[in-house]
Length: 457
Ligand code: PLP
Image 1 (cartoon, helix red, strand yellow):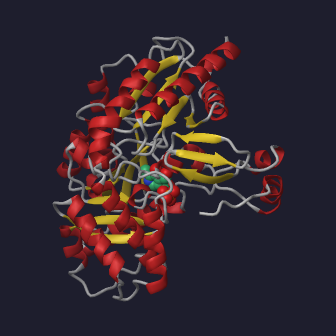
Image 2 (tube, rainbow, N blue to C red):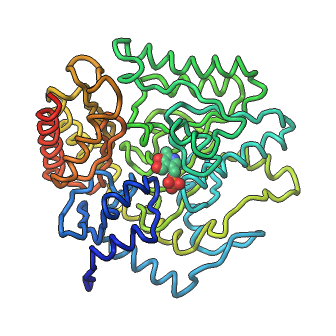
Image 3 (tube, rainbow, N blue to C red):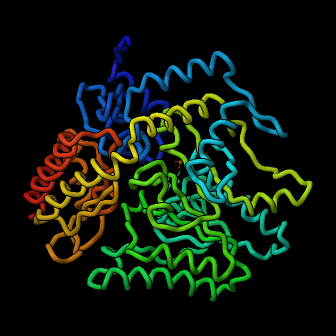
């Protein structure tokens, strides 16, 4: 492969002049003279324009599960582009790749989740959920069931409906969200909201908050509950034991649809193919994206139960929803091959019984650091909570979000890409990460914590 030479100074200048990056302060982008430019990647390592090799502790954006540089994914895309680069799936049309991918997903999901609607992003998948669930209840003759229940600090995307479903208050203030019909309840964030309480009792309290809200609104008005098995962007929040069983029981008690947003957790992140399998619950609808194609091309999927599809099939009307790129043949072909790689290389087993436990043991070493209040992980996703005083959840400066970004910046400068969520350092490396790379991740974080401790003390 020929490596292109980039004029990084010029790219950064043009970035400020013309490019608005996602989820960014445009003032800061301008003040620092342009974005960080990543020019290539291989395995679990990304390379920036200044020649720095950075270990990617975030798998891109929680998505490059099979790692970078998979030539066979590029070859599949090339072949499909030459044969049929595009055709749509509107008005009862299809192409071979989305049918093959839907069949594959139905097999992996198992049970009643046998029907797949394709979109291009996690946000779009959750928009599909929004319209599909309301349409379902209309057809069932219960049109008053309009309300979605979600958790505060949940992340379900950035479009109007998905950001409304999400519980990020800082997103809601832009664009006057949430739209009507979305209610936010407690999240099962023990370290932040239940510290000092028995974790299982705290989880039960968080689940009870859902039931209390259902009863306050009226169960006959509730359409669905949506949640991430493990909240990712909210700070890798792993619910206490028993939480998901209680949530499922509450949904069943009131006939409410259970929607799991598996956009991060799906395809092996937690050491099972899906988070719902890890937690032993049976959702009616599942959103998937990211790991579906390991981020090589944009594609997402909304899996729907047989019962829901039977309802949709009880009327003649079209489900008047869909995107130009629903079931895009190239993206679907790449996703299918990506799933084949995960199977062939037994990457889900690798997360469950090899790198997942190794990662947990490495994080347990970090837990001894004086600035670490908790180090938690499940499979290959984890977080480290930074505190001002060990044994408490007290934060530096008496407020959330001061130390986290400092530690993150020190990690990046030290050669590790991680994210800061308030005062948590969150990690989500590719499934192919090696033991040596995990050791390096933890060593860089420990050094960053030492450095920040010097500054803050
Ligand atoms: N749902 C979850 C759980 C996510 O983590 C994300 C993205 O991080 C989304 C939905 C939105 O996906 P996208 O950015 O592809 O629209």
